[in-house]
Image (cartoon, rainbow, N blue to C red; front, side, top):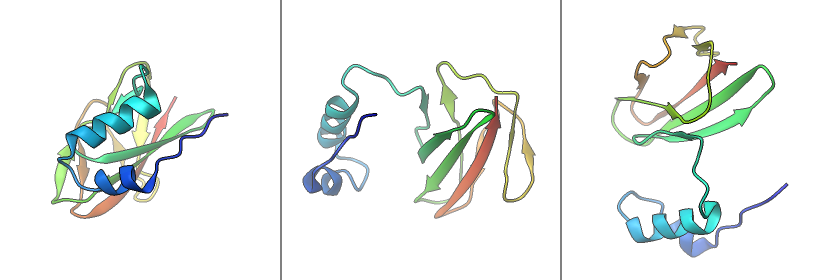
Amino acid sequence: GTAVILGADASYATRSPGSEFMEDWALKHTLDNLKSPYSCDDAIVYRIAAPKADHYFFINNDIAKSVTLDFDHYEYKNVTDPVSGETLELDVPIELEAFSGRWLRFEK
């Protein structure tokens, strides 16, 4: 495997939106020419891959909003919220409560 270590300065400098220089610098030195296979412009999103489903964790440090999770190469059968049991529609914006997190399971 590989690991990426960010120094405290990069972490501190990118803690709030708006530091485009440091955000670009961190992306260049962690991903180089690679592009993330998923993106969400309006929330922080982490992915954990598993054989039957990928799990996405959304963090919203802002007011309530609808966000879109975009994929380059992934295709999913359905998406559910394991906490509430709610089934969501694919390709529909995801609702996030203010200053909260949400876990969604995307079945392969």
